[in-house]
Amino acid sequence: MTTLPYLHTPDFLSNTLLIISIVALPLHVFGAYCILVKTPKMMNSVKWIMLNLHFWSVALDWGITFFTKPFVLFPAMAGVPLGVLSGMGVSTGVQIYVVVTLFCIVCAAIVSCFENRYYLSFGRKSIWHHFRFPCMLFNYFLAFLIFLPAYINAPDQVTGLQKLFELLPNLPEDIRRLPIYVIATEYSMVVGPVVLMGVVIMIEALIFVGLMYKGATKAIRLMTISLNTLIVQRKFLRALYIQIFMIFLNMGIPLFYLSVAVPFNYYNQAANNICFITYSLHGLTSTIVMVWIHKPYRMVIANLLDRGRSRRMSKAGRKRSVVEMNTRTTWNVSNVNIRLQYNVNIVNVVV
Image (cartoon, rainbow, N blue to C red; front, side, top):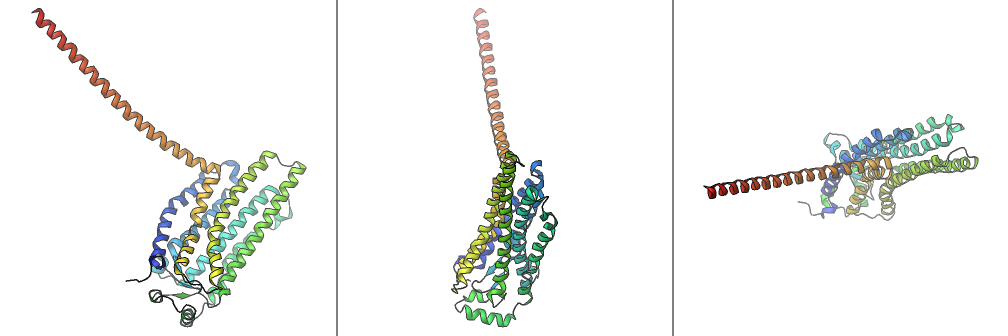
């Protein structure tokens, strides 16, 4: 029987991630339905790029909450996968590579959203028209390759575990008995690729935001775009900014914790578990924000709620009608009985 507090245990992480995956599944499906079916014609140009971001966000979400469930041991670059892929015999190294790669692909998909808005609004006739596909393909290519050196150069596990126990001498015995996998003995092998991908994506996103601002300013000055079109574009971009901010917020909290835990060699398994739970919420929060922020999708929910309210009112109205009908019938029958009895009494008196 474990002696660890529940928040420190693998069961806490595994059960919480399972609950998140169950709650998130219908919302993810509903989000995809809204994008595919409820996107208005005026937003058709962004439908597939939004679906691309949604798909990869959901893939990363499920990769963490269901397929891998990483029980990490920060500040060490080590951990134990608790998901279904382990039960299927998939090696821990492959699982780590897949999760990190999915994170990088989500970053590339975010940049694709900004690039798409810039190109459709202001870049069709610019020189960017000739470079956009190679540059976007480079981002996805980089996402698949950037963690490959760390995966290939994973240390010998006997040596890696020795260094792990030296780094974390107070590691609880219950955790020591788990099949721990050491990703790397050097932090830079794991943190470096993730930080590099984040920096590249951030720079590209800021460039496209700057180009869109510059293009909008120029279009207003030259009056080559209507004010109404500009307002619609700004509303969409504002919604996109909020959605992407929520993704970065969920991803940024664990990275911030890692940046503190590693230099100070701080180990707290409960904090590690909570960090990855927070990280795993990015797909769920992104879907909720997407559906709520974009008005066409928000109206779908409003219509569903109105329809449900109308059905409840209709059922209540039918029940009320039945009760009133029964009451009237009873009253009419009573009147007939009274009249019949009255007539009988008159006959008896006459006779």
